[in-house]
Image 1 (spheres, helix red, strand yellow):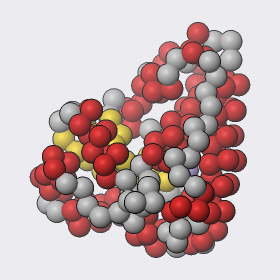
Image 2 (cartoon, helix red, strand yellow; image 1 turned 135 degrees about the vertical axis):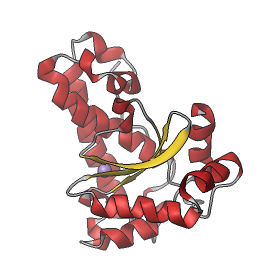
Image 3 (cartoon, rainbow, N blue to C red; image 1 turned 30 degrees about the vertical axis):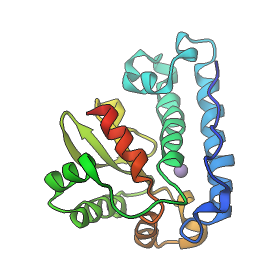
Image 4 (cartoon, rainbow, N blue to C red; image 1 turned 90 degrees about the vertical axis):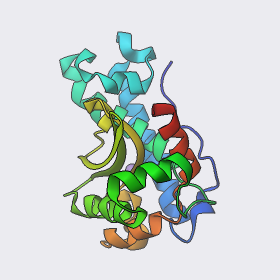
Length: 201
Ligand code: MN3
């Protein structure tokens, strides 16, 4: 079965004023749809056409050579954005609690240090990419990735990703990527991130 863009779990304008309605419409309906259309076209007729996208990205060596780059980019775009919509919420923001809060404290020193690391990684990502909180074995880490590369292709588990492609913020923040990342913390869905952490731990 071909991949489809999942519906946004909230209205387009729900993340305002931090993320504006038009950005969400274009990002979800146009950008994500284009990734889905292109990965479906790339995998059509191959044995991987029916595989969950995380299984495909976890081992890109199984993708035929001629299709690998298209699948990495567009399959990554589909997987990353599916996670991105879920990891935001109109009721988001604040700080995590419980085991996730403890793990962030142990790994980064403090929640503020963790946020600074995500921001630094996102701001310093040259061109398009993502800033990720990942589970690497049993420890948390923050890493960047270029394009639509996902840490799952390196055997890591992504828990949270901040999209730092210009399409994620340019209409409202123009060149001010640092301001967008600061604002993004107001919509982060910590219960969802904690759910991923618990499932992966
Ligand atoms: Mn994007």
